[in-house]
Length: 174
Image 1: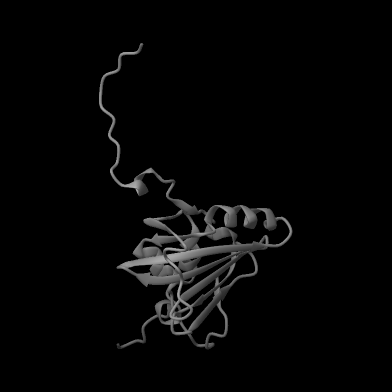
Image 2 (image 1 turned 90 degrees about the horizontal axis):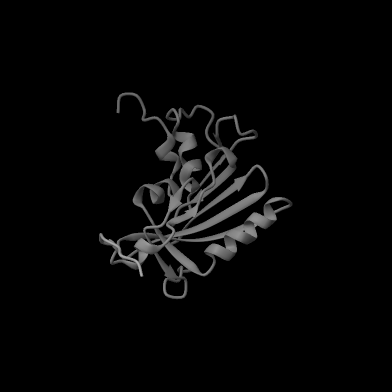
């Protein structure tokens, strides 16, 4: 027999018992990003090497971007934690009015997210695909995350909904 003293503080919410980490893909691995708003507006960012800065595909040549703003969306998958989780069958993604984000790494892993606002939360569904060495990682991600919808924090949802206007310096005199 054992004698123990003290108390055990057990959280009352089931979500408190979960491993909250959905994904952890460092920004340095990201080669390209395609963000499509729920209205269909698309923003594409890419770079050829990890040490390079991201560039906006098809940006007007005279566009002045905010310093460091171009790299912010790449950090959306780094230490991405859930705020809540539900089975995908209970939280289906609609066919329209959904924002999407696609992240491709230098080693061939592609992470696709669908994002929708519902019940005062931002919900994502995650799928992964990969080529060559990234194929096993994609299968592991799909096995872990498939069949679930995840609520994410507002700051991460904002990164996933980045638009060109969010990256551009305001015009002088405005």
